[in-house]
Image 1 (cartoon, rainbow, N blue to C red):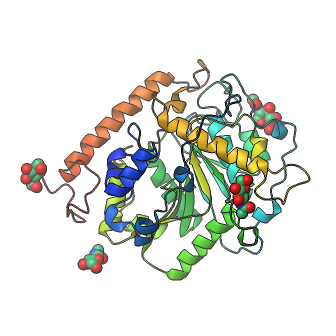
Image 2: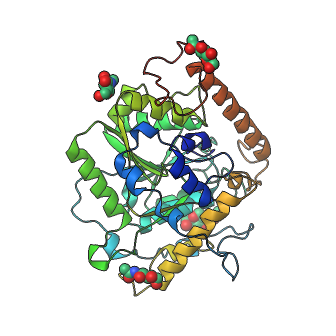
Length: 405
Ligand SMILES: *[C@@H]1O[C@H](CO)[C@@H](O)[C@H](O)[C@H]1NC(C)=O
Ligand SMILES: *[C@@H]1O[C@H](CO)[C@@H](O)[C@H](O)[C@H]1NC(C)=O
Ligand SMILES: *[C@@H]1O[C@H](CO)[C@@H](O)[C@H](O)[C@H]1NC(C)=O
Ligand SMILES: *[C@@H]1O[C@H](CO)[C@@H](O)[C@H](O)[C@H]1NC(C)=O
């Protein structure tokens, strides 16, 4: 699946200082940055710059030893799970006495390794496995469930592993575009009778903020629950709570319904601009919030065990392991952003599996997606008679779409 968060133009809408900051930090590359509509960025974002904390770290020297992540032929990145010995998480990350539901949906189209890494990082940060749902949008019907694909196939996903981790899998009926997948999330929430849900990109790694003073420490999951509780208590007109752009997002189902959900005729880029602008036009808020470190990566760690505390030292915080891991993730994020092949090159790297059920030529798949990305931009322009994300600032009003030619 192409990136879910999108668009360099959109970030320009964030305003000069922020853009300058991002440029300096190397964060604007290629064509992709997540976005927010400027008028509806809360003051707290503007003044304290609630950017993803990792981006505020200085650029790092590449690690001197071997690269932190995979070799291309590596097929097992979590040997402990394979051996049936999933490590224990830090007990401080476990939230007791929470009566709020916290469903977290993670959409999957390509690259099992990144997906597994994201899922395992949420588990290690305390997210209960029973609340994690992988939305299998690989478009290979029941082939993954039946174990018919091999790990070199881009659409391979190991159902058994997810089940072993306690994570459930829900399949989309066929391959959906980004906008369709978002609407699938909304519809799924309606079916489940959820008023809200979390969704996350699959190309992220989360870790709790162990840099906090120990007495104030809360794991990433606990902080996310705090944000949720506060949001529900405030009873405001909220649409989205954005943890590090939209890499992790809390969504209000009522707001999604109010604006008629995502426009599936704009399948990828610009569909976020369209959606977030329509929400803003209806006065639904989109605030940025914080729960810990979220990294946007295109590669995976060699062994996911490093996301867990060492055996026998489970409740220690801010260990050498943690600080090394944090550095690695920071490096991996910078590497993704600098990569000349594009931030999304990871999506085209697994290229085996020819002849397996529903196999598609990965390069062709990529080209096809790029085609629809372009068409989506074109449609956005037709819809608004305007081609940028700052619709709200430019005075466009709700209901004015398709009224100008
Ligand atoms: C999928 O995961 C299961 C459970 O961890 C493991 O036994 C199996 O070897 C994995 N399959 C592949 C092809 O790696
Ligand atoms: C955590 O570890 C880092 C690196 O060792 C250190 O700079 C920092 O002061 C520590 N923070 C706390 C709260 O212990
Ligand atoms: C949104 O807020 C503005 C300013 O308070 C108000 O004029 C407008 O009517 C509101 N729009 C909607 C759809 O509620
Ligand atoms: C559409 O956009 C063009 C170019 O900005 C502008 O000249 C034209 O007036 C717009 N049409 C309407 C109906 O607003």
